[in-house]
Image (spheres, one colour):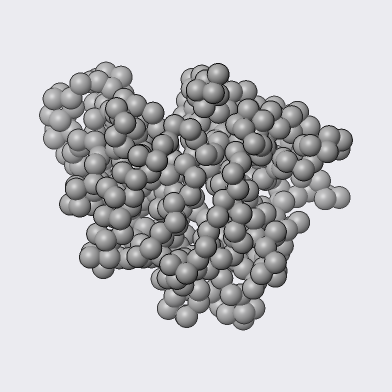
Length: 426
């Protein structure tokens, strides 16, 4: 089957790498793709969803996979399904689980799914009243999509009030912050759990852990993610079972009852507090960079996972994962996450270690194609170096060895990805 992947980042590149290993897959298309996806298939520069659906129909593309949240909340799935096309991802109504933090928090409350105490409001006075009743730190979230940046963890009441005021005034995140959620801070460790859903059935992927902060030891500003690893030893069978019974199954049941069956990736941001999983947030797509580690762990044909979910047939899928670990290290541009950086040519040394050649790879993200086929770093997060191994330490070593082969002006990366898991091992 020929497949279209919607998106342009490392997440979409990683999905494509998994599909390229699949004997069931023919040609890959990307809309719009990036400077490196043209090596894996054909980039399609159509940003109108109706026209893109027409392209899919004309070229008899069997499956479309949507990577980012933007097209999902904007209704691309509805447009494609109205034309009888097979597409992986939730409807616009179901995508509200990410598109509106207020919708998500109220949904959790309605269906008794464990989450932090909160208030949702567009009133600054109500926000202040709630803040005054809370102990610090306090979490303040913009309601709408903010590319993963609409969350402020305030260490004082004054800081929380300032964040609330800047959001509600529109100065911080525009319309996305005209309504806010203020909630209690949960003290525990954070996990990323992904369930592939078809509206009724689901498959839980190995749990991952993201590293949001720019600098080692989780210091510096929040980013879109500086690396991740999977699976994490911080999750045991008890936590998986609690998540299935208390979170995933009630969510699928609740969404169906509310007329918005959930098909696609349910990305569950979890805080584990004293052994109990509490839900921080839902997203409706793969995390980036978690996807870069999960895709190479998939043993089953990738097309089966996505197609069976898109056609509501997961009950007949046999999905397996390799008994290995993956560590991904993001290489970012010089000024990330503060501002745009000057384009810089990417030079990759010849890989002379057979071990690295066989067990590590690059997922390209913020890159463009220049003259003579040269790649240039033009995005904040430029690429992800991924290592695979029988242990987390082995996977980490391979990822960082590959990082040493990649060069561009101003490159930056953390040197401690997977440090929490490695501390458990030692």
